[in-house]
Image (cartoon, rainbow, N blue to C red; front, side):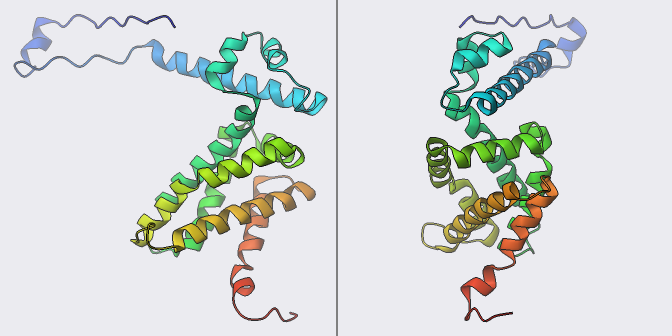
Length: 236
């Protein structure tokens, strides 16, 4: 990889006079940094868009990485700068959603009980889907692809299993407990994952494919948690 040489602008005598003795001047942000980041994001988004189009047309298993890069007119080496594999590209949607949820959960008011905070955090993270994952239709397409592709479904479940610790830590900090000795953060984190999975299934089968519909499906399952866990299930 080529090294980028950054040249710090020359400090004028007037500016140097106000610096504390022996303290170096802070370098100004490089003007091209923001432009490069935007270009990287556009390339990443283009790779995802091309991949999802090819997966829909040809199938996940029958799509090669070089076909994705040909569609974007970049090299395979460029693809692997962003994603470790096709599987990693698909799971990037899951990672973005999980990160958004954990951030929203950590920001919820402390007076909310854990399940209420999780419900609100899920709604907030869904509202960020258009910025993080293209749009709601793309997210729906990805979740449908995961659900219908055994290798991706296994990878998705493995990812959820291996990366639920962030949510567990957030829940534990909110409630002031030690997750090493208190099982409740792990129980709730596992339950949240199950609710998301069930809500995704309903969302895919439903006619209204919007973030609001997904949130409603999640809330419908969350509403049944107490009745499912306590007492007998009498007809209502």
